[in-house]
Length: 334
Image (cartoon, rainbow, N blue to C red; front, side, top):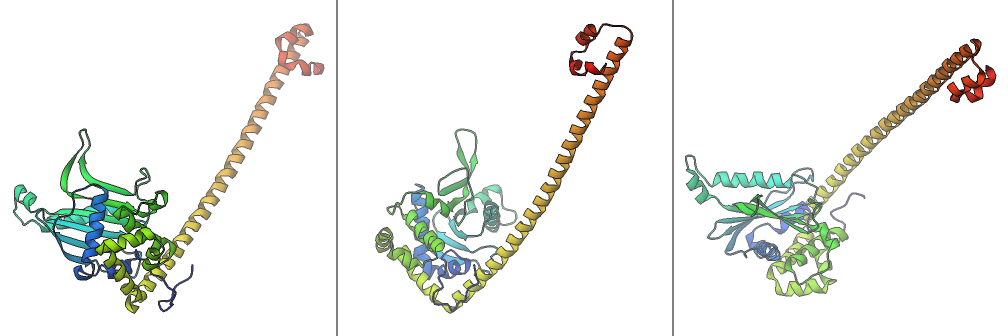
């Protein structure tokens, strides 16, 4: 895979790439409806209570030109009676500790909600609800085939119950789409199909929608998805975003080359060690066989010596044969 030029008219930007996601969800004015649609689609798919309230801010974490650094995260704050914060995060590069990141991030929000000297009752009353929606371009949990993997702090002994309702979320494993039957009646499936197909097949969001009747129908009725599609078209044509995307993409290639080289070095080292181990095992096996053969020769020599001694003492040869049946072929030497 070669590096890319931001001025290439055929360059297609992945909607899941950090610079692109950060630009699409720039603020509540341009992405408030899209943010609300994704949240509601996720809650609806998991039969959770629907979002009640108004999105008051959409704030992307600062994107980075290097994929090695933390991926794009968009904080979506909702003003509700429950003081809810819903966090929407796009993470492409494999990050097996994303749950730790979520917990650590939530801890900051919890800490900021309380003041020094607050009692536990006051802390509980002021603690916000933090819900994470992680769109993952990789499989985080292999032991379960469902695309959406909810997580909460639970009591594990039956009956299972939520222990802390203020922290939880959903890991949406986009590659699971490839194992699912198409269902464009499901809002979350529509969102995930559009995002992952565009990312996987290197197509624009508009191309994916135009070739999929189910998405066309969804776009006609969902204002948030419409806003996302419009926003993607604007962002993907912006020179600034295309430059950031090219930097991000080309850096990912450099890092991939480094990782591939390191893996190859590791494989070569492992193969060399395996070859040395096999050589030592072969040498040990030859030594073991030689020792067994030498022990067998000594045993036969001792038996022959004993048989010869008996013959010299006048013991009949037939008696000696009965006493040493394993030396039948060697009795001619006696």
